[in-house]
Image (tube, rainbow, N blue to C red; front, side, top):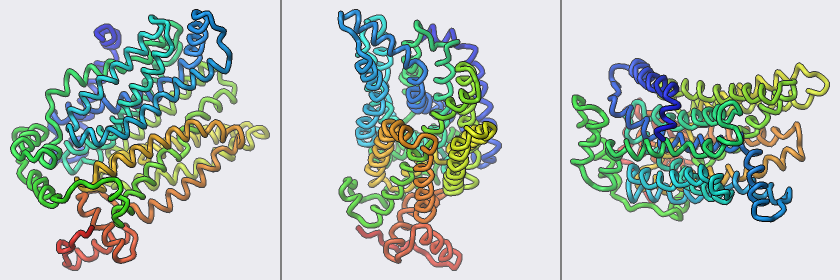
Length: 531
């Protein structure tokens, strides 16, 4: 780890300057009323780097060294006096790739219950143990001359990352001031796409994508694991968790003061948490009850649609086709690899921009236009691919559309589903809702990963058509049924769904009715939430 830090110090120093600069920009954008405490920024960095970053890195790192790993599998099999068939090598390499999402499904199952029982902070500590162990196994696989260590390592890091996706967005949102709660939630996705880009850069043959360095490329996440294990202990757990789960008001106030700064009055924010504590006197909801209760069923179903729109948007297909299209217009493989970095760079830049827009425009105004941009781009990409043989210039339309498509994904659909569930559900239903939606996300990832190549084989240049249809369905459903959560408490959002089921309206219409009632001086405080 010390060697890696020393070797990459030229990269780390500018990164520290970037963090300081972003803090300054956030202060200016959020206004004087939201002065960010440096300890909050520090905690946000440690949480995102030690969890979200690892998820993004392990998602993208496997693409570059896949051929080198296949050679390694052949050599190991030969050293065992066995003849490696093409089918065996392909099966083992596929298992290495699939190990990550398979582990992720199990991680998604344990992440939310673990976070609820042990707390956000302790959960991240514990999960970084299998994360570090998996990274070490992959790094040492060549030394041990055993490719099975890579498979086990991929499952372990997948397990940790699956749980990270259930815990990190919630932890980040819960420690943030209400005025930048959405921006803090997007930090999770910013860390993910930044790590994706870094994994692409490190995977280049000029960097670490070589026959000698690829095992270390796979295991580089040992660095953020160690960083989190060393630094997170200085940060308190989520004040919301401390108060609502541990029922410790004094510790919650201390944690809140730590995140806001010593000179900030936290009494008003603490009062809001206490009010939520009083309101949440009901028992925790089981998964079955979540689907049995009518208005909660509506809420969880639209939350599932939001997560499905992320994975079934065609983003993986766009990333696949970007390199293929660069090769088609006579780029060399090396040039195509560098050009593909531009796609990753686009995701980072647009995600960064969305941090400054999320609180001003809200969730719906970023999520729905983002999906709309992707819908239009799938049509343009299909046209470009379909007629490229007769008019090569149209290929440039397809390439440009892929960049815009990725930008549409990054502006909202890539980040908002991860944290909006925590904004839609109150404390007693939140853990069950997060478990369901994160699990759906990981299962969808497996389906897309395994199914897209089959889709490509049958539809070829028209493989984006199914995504066009799905995006149209997602846009229609989310437009009608997903309420705005910006600046509103989970209890208020729950009231939208309850009113929608009793009045026969959509939650969005119910929200509009509630706004009209407020303007006419009518109160909805007397509404009794029935179960």
